Image (cartoon, rainbow, N blue to C red; front, side, top):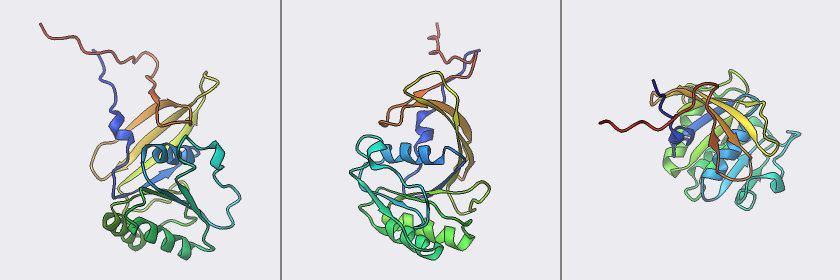
Length: 195
């Protein structure tokens, strides 16, 4: 029995909706999405957050399009996210809230994303998801043998459109290009033509 390869389209989050990513690899997932979304990018994180994206360490083309916002509190952060999602020229809004989103706040962000035709990605703490989001991803780095790349395990564990799955990929963090990695003894081969 031959296995069919997993769909690479599944790794592209749906436009004009708000999504969530949790786990130690959530920022790598956000950078991967940023590399795949053309146009202006907005990253919103609390003003007291000790870590910020280093512009020179981002995938090619992302640093030039990225706008960092650092609001003082959680209320201001959610206001910034909503306004950025409504801004039609913005392609992707990434935000790092400290508290779980209420259903009302999550719904407001979905409506803002639909109005602006903008994609939102909330980088949340473990088990702090909102029922209003379109998808929720669990993102973890994995040990690998390549010196210039990192293996990532990205699991889609909530999807309002129905399809769930888990993908291991080799991504070097420098561009939008990546390679799918097969599990041991599960090599994906092309189907043989029927006779």
